[in-house]
Length: 492
Image (spheres, one colour):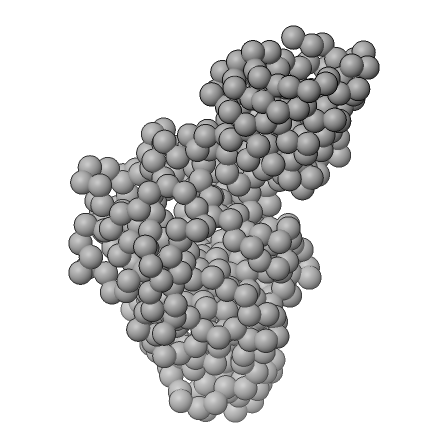
């Protein structure tokens, strides 16, 4: 899956998170050797304890404003095809933002191809060659995702022999009920394809003093207007207080509703999307024209992909100088452009903001107890970095699994399980962890021709196991009863 995710070149600013939904956050300077503090007093952590790979600096450090934009973490093939940041987090919903830049750091003039995943689901795909300005300037991309297992996995997968890169990683806890999760559920990741503030320039964390409790940054709507709309549109703004802002669960900021666009005709926007995904649109309005004094003074229709989805009278819904928002989900897109029109009925339309999120279904992940077992095996077998045993052993499903590992869905297709481990002749020098008995779906185990030692786990020979090859190793001690009495097992 290749996602045309929303990219923007800007800078980060830390905010104190509201106590309504927790205050867990990470600000990680990927490739940074020491912790640094940016001009907004955000402390960015060196990532040396979070992941593997190698570090570099961008080729033109003076081109970038902040310390966390000047370093790069890259993952050469010697680190394995798959590399991850594993961040301990309490269960909840989180805002993830990455800064990705190439800037010819390695002097090869070849921007890399790679995928990125969050919680085992592919969310971003980079393909070479990148647009020149993107390769040089870098870009931020963001999403909302649930974390349910006490840690967040942000992983990178090499395409061909390219080295994935990342400049910075930010994670903030947000309200779990935000963006209509009670209706949509927690089985989707919301990937940002456009977060527009109408009638204003870019603002929010990183390039203005205007705050957003979730850390969201808002881009000007100007480049998304159609040519005809650009001819008739004009902006409104106010310094007056807007009621109903910064309210749970979405905490939309007051600044969003203090600007708007209007025009004497149809206002139309074109949003780039990927076909075959569903999209969640959020619309933001406030009646900030004091000449509108009663309902029915301004009425307009919202039309999405030529479908009239709602008639709006902002004054009737919220009154004057008050925030009004609502959402709409677009299903089964067949094109790469999503059109939004605001069609006048009485007076001229008015719009303060538009958000567009791809609803990316969560991929299946490995059963938790089997993740525990595989991580224990990674340590006990001393699996080398080159084999890429990082993150979820089986997910995402359209990446290769951990090298030497075969997976399949369980019977009710709610999780992935390990059915085969083939690590023969890999130079392993450790031992077999007792946790291997948690692999209750393991059919084949081949650890032959290594230098493994120690005693065999007492429970090895689980009922699912039908073929076992431990030959040409250095094990000691008695053969476990579970193996000696296993009539179902073919020993090699």
